[in-house]
Length: 295
Image (cartoon, rainbow, N blue to C red; front, side):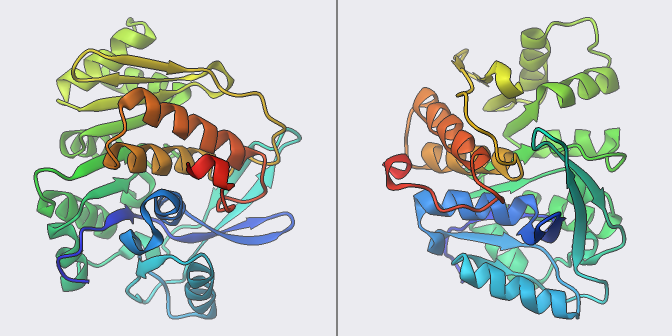
């Protein structure tokens, strides 16, 4: 794997235990899978940690089934699970088990090797709830090359975040992806409450010297604010929602892939919206995209 420039999903690899059975989940695998549909699965990789248990073996089998590369050191904690219950309109509620393998991702020589030649990496706040993985993620980001796209897909979950983690992540990323509800939390945290949506997005983008800030507003569309003053807006397509699990990760993965493929921001944004709308119509986070979307 040495010197290959991977696009990396870094953080929690876990099982979503849904009413109809369990499915492999966690933002890193979802991101790597969706970016890989556009960049070639050989060019993306999920990095996390697994336990010494049968669920870990099932994880490897499921990743292989999806054609995903992985680097998943085994640690002496159980493989991660999340109990997911869906409301009537397919919106998930999560019970995220604590003290699990992905809380304890070690910064191994192999992980460091991938960081040093990394082309893009996507990480969130959840995997930084425990000091071990927090240190690994920070070190990984610090070791990436200058041209690496570092996407902080904030993914605030329950009580598993704090101002320090958010701030350190914002300092290290060059693209922030956030939704409208998370923006309210961040505005409160950073004392930006008096600002309207656009002004607070521009303030976060400029304060942390970001290339882009991506704001998703559910059915009200999404925005990309860039460092050269461009604002891209896309409506959210009206679709029949099966479940929204993994839709945000598919947006990030396809957006990142389009940017890496040299597409203009508006075109990358449009593709991300189309992909994420399709994923909402499918059960689970990793459906195969139809050829029309891959064009």
